Length: 304
Image (cartoon, rainbow, N blue to C red; front, side, top):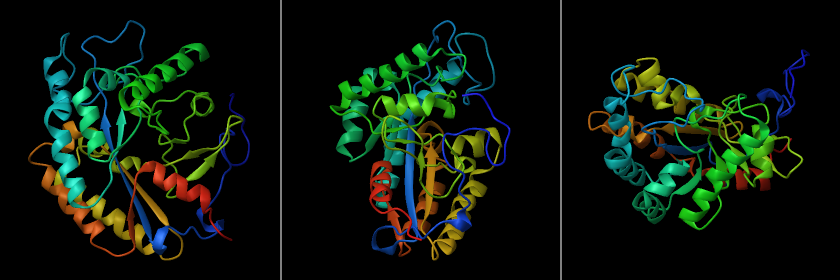
């Protein structure tokens, strides 16, 4: 889809819609804020396939020669330790997690799949691996196969096809939303441009965006931008407080993407606990999975 220079946006994936011109969005029980927490279970490969697009992945002690044990083992901490700690904190606050799981995790960590399902998590697509990211370097055939590999792995592991999708490192090509919709995906988390869900255009059926607040992504904040964990906790609280005030007029959405290898560290987890407790102890908050939010939004669109 080539860019077209014109008023508004340079693409036609969705309609431009300024918040101030929309009707009122009402969440269940007139909640002011819907909270969705996504846990990123992406596996970093020992040796990515030749030709795969691997952006500079966080973790470890900087770029090192192969094999980079520090980075590999740092990130694997999330699969071995961090995920269980983070799930406990979410359960304490009554938050149903949405787990973005890649194909390699689904295929190689059956215990994690079973554990997440037993904890009531929704599992959504997350590509093939952290070190294989969708980009426009792929042909349409390659990207279609990549998406199908991810969906088939989750379907085998969980017994059901995923409804949602978060690309590794938010990676997409210009074709991705339509290819995801064609593969049966109903919502995508890669677009970070709103505080409410919205419809994406696709000839293959209903497709929606569930926008992540990307600056509250723990890797973006604490690893890439070197925000301290105390300041990160305050960012979560302050964001929620603003959305809660704005939500008195029309419902708002707070989607937080967390990586258990980072936020699940013992010196960080209590800060997350404090932030989530601050949010969920208020009335007028709906903590839900990605599918629950999209299902509600589709049945109850904003009213003018």
